[in-house]
Image (tube, rainbow, N blue to C red):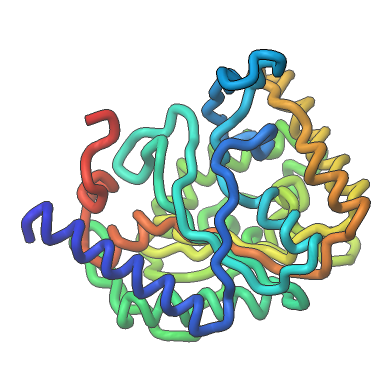
Amino acid sequence: MSATAIFAARMRLQSRLRVRLEQSGYQEVATFALQPAPGMDLQLDPISAIYRPLMDRRLAERMLYLHTSPEFAMKRLLCRGMKKIYQLGPAFRQGELGPLHTPEFTIAEWYQAGWTWLELMQETEKIVCDLLEGTAIVRAKKISLSPPLPRLAVDEAFRQVGVDLSRWDRLDHQQYRESFERAYLDKLEPWLAEQGALFLTRFPEPLALLAKLEPGPEPTAERFELIVGGIELANGCSELTAPDENLDRINRDLEARKRLGKAAPPLPREFINDLKKFGLPECAGVALGVDRLAMIALGADKIEQVQALPFGA
């Protein structure tokens, strides 16, 4: 297939995804890519931009950020009464460039009020399997995608490669994440590449991000990742709704960023204020990498093969 034909096929797939979401009752929304505060995920670094109010010089310059995902803005819409929404558009992440990464990429993110991660995982599975028509191609290898896909808890997945996560129980959150990341890249990711398609579920509490925790003596996050041939395709969860706990987790990640010498963007105050003023309903949300979806649909080896032009060209 020529580069032009591959890109055209990618755009058809993207159109089918939009139609599929709307047929499922999701309403499309569009929020600003430029935000006063980005996400705080330790693994992600935002791209900043200075806004200069040239039309009204009485206003001060502002530091804004290209969103790493539209999560905060979409949750604010849920706070304001929207129930079932999706967004399909660009997201931006500093420093990411490689076969599976680019600083600007396309993300599909959707949320449904009243749902849990389990219902959303089942829907995500059906949407992805339908769009891929039951087959993915990763590194020239065909992978069958026939629901139901296997579900594997994170601790059990690590046991398969000889790693006992309980030995990290005494580590703080930052140390835990660093240990997890090293073991994932060195041991689990190569194993996952041989497993076809599956869902990783029930992430350890230090990796909950802004997901709700299941109660129990060893709480785990109500969170899933869809992995196809070792490639992370989608990441979803039951969303944390409590304003104070959201703020605590964001502050914890902000402090961790400072300790690591990373840029410390401002708190997402508008998001926290809306949680307190309006309340976030019980809901579940998922983010899907559209470029990666196109890659495994078309058998591409590099993300730039399914994009109109290489990054920076």
